[in-house]
Image (tube, rainbow, N blue to C red; front, side, top):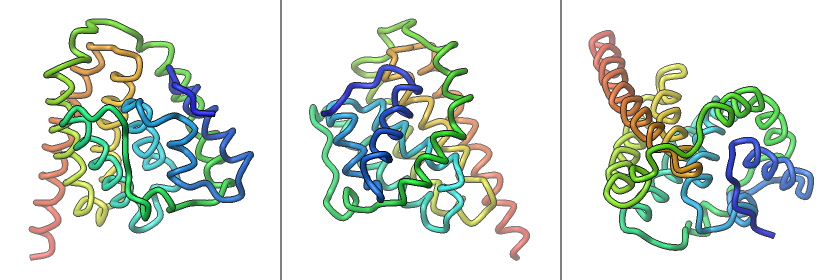
Length: 201
C-alpha cells in the first residue's frame, strides 16, 4: 500500500520494506510504495541514492538526474500525479544494495529529521515551488559532465535532496538553504568543469 512519508527516516523505512519484499528493487516499486502524489519523497530518493555507493556506479548519477529532471518538470507544470515512463520505472538494483544504502543514510536521516520541520510554509507552495523546479532542472543538467569527475555530481544532488526534504516537511527556511546550495553547486560545478577543460588542454 502506498504511503505518504513525512520524514527522511520514513522514506528509508519504505525502502527497507520494498527491499524485503523483492530480490530486485525497481524505480516503479519505490514509487508505488511512496505514492505518486508526493514530489518531496520522489525527489529525495534518487538524490539520496546518488550520495551512497550506488551513485559510484558509472552512468547511475546521470540516470538518477534524468529521473529527478522528469519529476521537476512535472512539478514545474503543477501535475497532480507523478508519472515516469516504463523504461525508467522498470530499472532496478539488487535489494541488498538498497538495504546497504539505507543503512548508510540512517545517521544523516536522523539529523535532518531533528533539525528541519515546518517553518515559513508560504515558501513551500505556489511560485517558490516552480522556482525550485527550474533550479532542480538546471542542477540535473550539470550532472552528466560532472559525473566524469570523482564525487562532483554529489553537489547538485545534495541540493536536490534539500529541496525534496523542504517540500516534504513544508520548511520554507530549508527551501532558502536549498536555493543557496543550488547556487553554490552551480558555481562549484562550473569551476570544476572549467578546471578540467584547462587541464585537458
